[in-house]
Image (cartoon, rainbow, N blue to C red; front, side, top):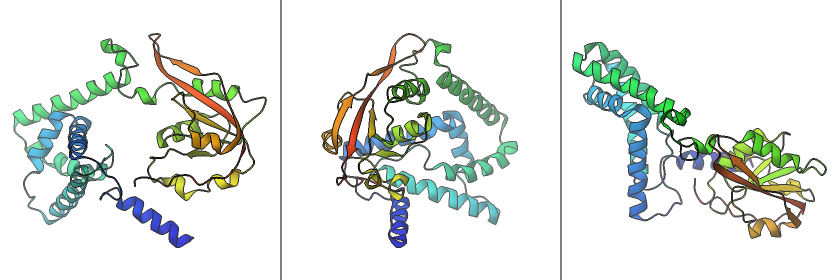
Length: 278
């Protein structure tokens, strides 16, 4: 069991660098690559990214700096290659920037006045972009179309769903995605185990934890942002009953999302699809 767990952890980390099971068209791969590169530039701010590239494009003279330079670029190169074949999350190459930013900071004093102004403008633009992302109404942008909208307004709606189960509590939660698993586990009023059950989900830490087989005979709740109860979930229980949907209203009165939930009784262990990707 321990050996299998270690093997799974290795394959999970391997999948952060090389594609394991993902199959996509070249069009999808190119779009993912462009999204990855664009996301990296925006994360640093475009101007700071240009200044960073200009500064670290040449091999440093000191041996210590060369080691840091080489390791950082190697990590970044790995993820650039992976982005050509499969999806790479924005934060995965973050370790590469630690070393590169250290090298960059050590050379700022040696930059020309023009380049130092460029860096200052870039840093200011980063603060401005972050302010807009966190407070979209500063520029009249609706919260329903703003960056980070998927991270907003979860606590009260999830509490409203949980309130509908107070007279007949559930013992665990089922969700369609890794993203929603974290949100549901954090905001649900009681501490309950959460299980992602989507057919196309990726391998995650949930696969190392105790599985759904321990919930046999218990009642659970399926929580989603789509109005359809998957047939696999329906067939895994003796009965599923839809709860009242909860609309999430943004500050401008528009609907940001709607939460749908089904209370399901008497879980009967079934074979769930294995993770599709790492």
